[in-house]
Length: 124
Image (cartoon, one colour):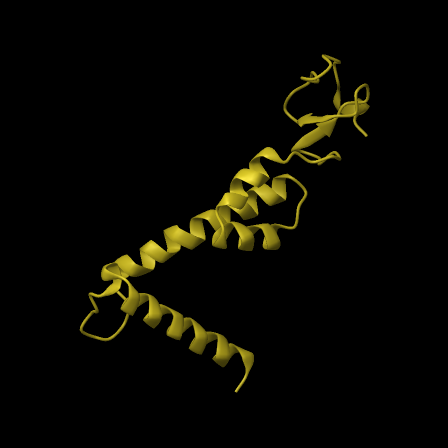
């Protein structure tokens, strides 16, 4: 028995535990599987923050798998990612000012911190 079998067994046990511990999950379908509403609930609860964390991490030059996993389990990490700007230039997302050295959004042509005009050829 491999790791895949163990993961599936763990997931099934976890879902059964959720079903027995919450009034929301007590309605079991007649065929023994999960209700579609339960799957949608779990997807919204864990999947949506994970997808947003993955997207934010990609645009900020961070590890998307790590931040997606952290955001899926602890959605507070979305706030951390949103306000934590990169320190180096990320082409297409953030550029670094040659005058003050701070990063600002790529779409802006003027540094919002010092007011220096930055063109595409000036970026590092």
